[in-house]
Length: 184
Image (cartoon, rainbow, N blue to C red; front, side):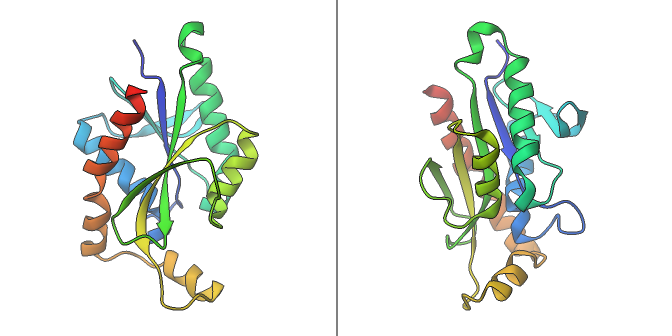
């Protein structure tokens, strides 16, 4: 049976690929490694990077974080279309993203509710038009200042190797959540 869970990561393309705002992509890559899945490869339908394994299909949005809605919605629609009619009703979407305010590397799951100002999540909610999805956030911390410019500079700052390792180390906890989602 093909995987019925699409795990979509959102972040930014280069030159922002190793910034806090791309923590979802970094977590996704760590999950692929943990699961021994094939590397992401280019896909034209949907546009982005895709890796399919025995349990999950991973999708990496090619867009800027705040414009993630259309690519993720298109990927999910294509994913569901590719399932058998019997499997379509069981299809699930999980979005991996950065989580401001949470300690670096901490993994949190959420279904519905507030977007907490996350523009990428807001855009996905808008594009999916009411389709429920699960969010798995990886903590990135927060700058001391609440000023929007300082926050923008923080999320677009390149991570150190130690910070990157802490994000990747969240893969084990994220996998436990994916298994919980898979189990129902």
